[in-house]
Image (cartoon, rainbow, N blue to C red; front, top):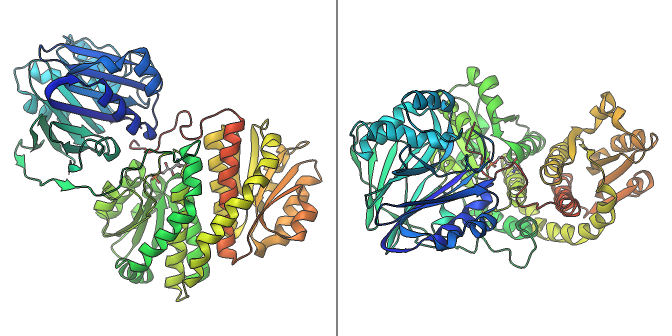
Length: 596
Ligand code: M6R
């Protein structure tokens, strides 16, 4: 997803290296184009931008040499306008006296462009970031100062976004937040604004979180916050961030994804510690027990964890929770929601727009808002009555791995507690995960090359393993670009079986409880020439029926299913590599989806 960064320094200096580093730290969000602008003391704007990755574009356009007292950088993930040089950000106003960039979506971009052209402005791209600049230009041309112009522009720009903008001949930059994340940093010799913390923390740990509807006016020595509604000043004390910044290091691994998979046992252990010591667990459980309806809400991987949570809750606590994708929650359940209902919203980033939209609707209806979130301080943590941290630290690679396992472990913990079971069984989890990772990798390597040519495959599971099959399929399609469909194993014969030809790969995630049922599925495929791969406990029946078997350690059915996701994560990672892709930053995707 797009990211913006802006800086104002005390002295004129070479800003290129700072902007490049900020771009690298924002790059985990996913992007297709990069741009930088600096404004020097003569008011000359140096704008360089193009399609490509940060280091590549920075080299080609010599970002390194860019200097001034004011600078901005933008990483663009295309929504309005194809990825192209002209659509890259930042953008200039008509006369080239202002420059700005945004993150998010301006949904009335098409109408606005027509108005700007009709008003005689020079519109160079089809990108909505340019509309933010012209919307401010429109009012500056009428003689308004920048803050007043931004306040008026807000009335014209529909959507959720944040932008940074600067004008030649001044000593400051301006930013505005409405829906997309924005933080400010107060360093000794500079003031910074950014879409998120990793790009700010190397420069300062003194930060101010910007809230929706706030304009930031920032100069080298500080900033002021003003409400867009009436221009009044907002008082907010800075906070000091203590978090470690070893984030963007791969720690000897080839990719962040590989590193993050291997961190799973360690973060699981930390999570269990957090949960045991959390004061929020008991009051959350209390409300969940007495809720009229209980919903587990998320998107993508986080939704798959919700499904797993729902299966756990029903089995271990006899309580029904409805797992639902966030946008469908609004469409399907909002009309029936009430104050007696509870929603548990699950999100790694805590900024996923689809999830925040669902939260807003649930709030409006008076339902209780609980959440499981990885990024502390994110919007979701702020709007939740209770939130449980995932405790994973930064997850940089776009494919979610360690956050999925910790989401599932949290649900398992809650289900055990709600059902009055002993949770000490979970203590063996980190070791079992460690063992799974060790034994699965060589087994995965025996099939990765044979799987490489297949552009289509299935991943099937039943009961506890059904959400795992969905998650495995999502991982495979996300980073190998093969179409992999996740499905309930029993559904395969109701249509998809027609896809099976000689050697056609079908992966089964196997729970020990359902082996006879899975064996039927395996045989339906192999008798038609298909290739059945099973992932489950070491069981002679699997070896006798499937072509390949990847084993996980023996334990309870609830934990076996969780363990089977590890070989699937490793398989998708290895398959991505043998197919020649970078699993950390899959094409077209973004880590944090802050748009509808
Ligand atoms: O930050 P969130 O957990 O809310 O993100 C939701 C999805 O966009 C995310 O899980 C996505 O599906 C993953 N990249 C899949 O690996």
